[in-house]
Length: 414
Ligand code: RFL
Ligand code: PHB
Image 1 (cartoon, rainbow, N blue to C red):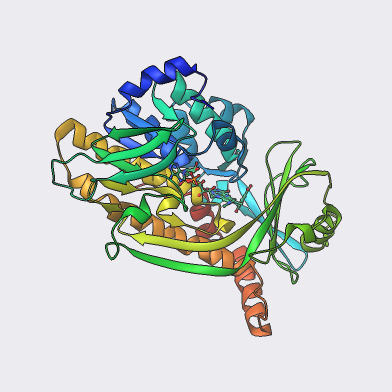
Image 2: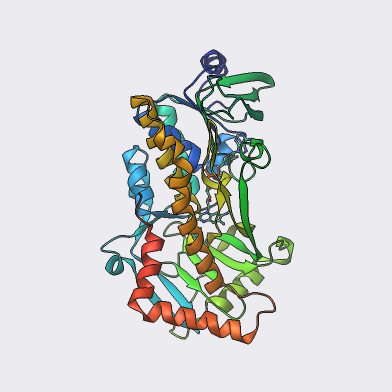
């Protein structure tokens, strides 16, 4: 079935002939690939985005919800922020709840007025896809058998290419550079020869069970709750929809979690001694995500540049994955613009080292938030006391609260 955006099958057939050549071939239409294509378009650089999933799937996949100020500014710059500014919710703080009491971290006061935007990732994807198609750039969903070749030599005159099938027909897209924005299960990173990149990894012994519920959010701002029974998070998507998470086993069986058990657990873990109550509603989506941290070094090989989840994964506790993906492609777009306008290659050569400085700081923050807020199975009383002391310190020391706040709203771009 042809689902080339909103165009007809005939238009699609015609555009296949143009498809054979572009400046930047982008694999993956997640936040990294779509934002990169927009940024390149603004610089007059041509790109083609190839995505294995359908447009519908990409636009409905429930994931992130917290956008840093820098991500919000960028979406506005590329002309895809209008609906987000209307429908998104700006927050100037988050709450940490432990021992039944709630402590507010005031971003506005601690970061000189900065905040975050609550806006669902899939809504952002819809806006990016719509704007990209309106600007005439090329984006193909439902492609199959994607593979990449001839990308290994940065200085060689050989052109990299992306092979794929569309409607059963084999295609080849030749380009100057390939951007591997194909997430943690993509093909670009595994195409780099063995021994060229080093992979750093940490697997956590827990996961998150996430739900969307038709319930007005029970708090104006997010609540991160530390509890003896495990971590819980109250987030939201709109004034009518709550997004809630529970710490669980990494391979938790959802069949063991009927709706009433989920609510019971959320009530227990989010309980407060301050007269607060959790509003329930119909659960409209459920899912389990395992948690891990990973980074590859370097994030480039020849004419292939890896960005976003394809290069690094952070546990969701710091709400950073999408924002980090956007930060990578911002660096890449600037380096490519410099290359095409002046022939300078130094920014491209420095792509990986520039990105990795931010990546490791974000890994540090996400891993710190994760260990402070989660309970480990078999954890001893000493560790438990340390976690409580960490939370007590973070919420009572201005310096510590400020550290959390400046990382949460997003470190400045280099
Ligand atoms: P994506 O979004 O995974 O997109 C990659 C795209 O590539 C496609 N693909 C291919 N296309 C062509 N050929 C192939 N061979 C391909 N293989 C794969 C895929 O279909 C997909 O469309 O990666 P990207 O663009 O790097 O973006 C990363 C973010 O999506 C991710 O980091 C965030 O969702 C993480 N995350 C959060 N990030 C935040 O910044 N704030 C949050 O609040 C937040 N909460 C979350 C999250 C992730 C979660 N889960 C489910 C993992 C909450 C959760 C529960
Ligand atoms: C979300 O709303 O999905 C969300 C919020 C904060 C996080 C992770 C996910 O840390």
